Image (tube, rainbow, N blue to C red; front, side, top):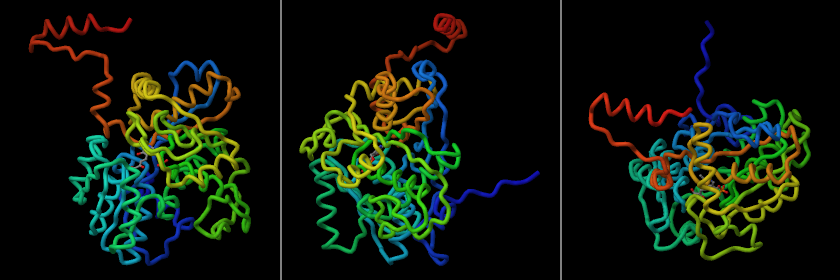
Length: 381
Ligand code: AN7
């Protein structure tokens, strides 16, 4: 019997492609290495013969893709001697920041929008010992304050304007390529600040890069010339497709918006921090931006749970909602390979899930006869 090597996180796995040295103390919770699940049961996909996968990032240690960026950002903050980190967050970044700060033994300050953060995320930040500041305003107000306070207090910002975040997050693209053996034709993501779509593009571009050439104009890590590359692993990169919630869709409006609204609170963002990068990604990849309304988001969240047993949070479902719509519209050629990132776990937001569940919970007396009749009445033919 050969035993498997213990998986110790994405920095160890990709250390030759990340800005760490042999003496760096790595702050990790075993993030990354998430499953790429092929969807089988959704009928559109069978009809159109699409090879359709979801990258289930909800299975990271704190339940979202933010862990990939946070292991890197907190590792570097600690290496640089930081005693405290700070972020504004719609919820998932704060949960990840709190966890990795706890792991490192430093303080996390998190600014969250008033009343618009899913319960699971708040519970995480509180349990993990973050100092939670509930700002009377939205994410964009919090982000503005974080940028201002960084000049006034000894705190390291770990929002995705911290370039180490995107370096950690690019590893999701590496994992996909390594499992498929090639890059997908299309990659769909929810877009809030547009950090993640940029990070995936950097990842795919590094794997497609020839030594000494510019990987992508979005690559800030190594002055656009990546020193780590000695092998071109893929020759084609995907078209990157970013979906926004209709009430929070600055990329569709072509300008920042002041009062973003959506049930998908994770992406309730009007001033995306990676605005310029995201346009570069669209341009270089030949992809596009589009939007879905809240009812489409929730219907797809439910579809994924009911048909495939995959429970993601509302913001994550928008990637699949968009891809299914584009497939129905004939935008995706037959036999294409499509990957959608499911950015966060459904357990993050139990309230929204329960509110939209139509199936009644059947109350019974603790009697065999009642359980039996409930079963017989509800058997699916
Ligand atoms: C589940 O936590 O911005 O486009 O403060 O939590 O990289 O911003 C969360 C973003 C998608 C959007 N899906 O990613 C935060 C925060 C989920 C998210 C996004 C977020 P970006």
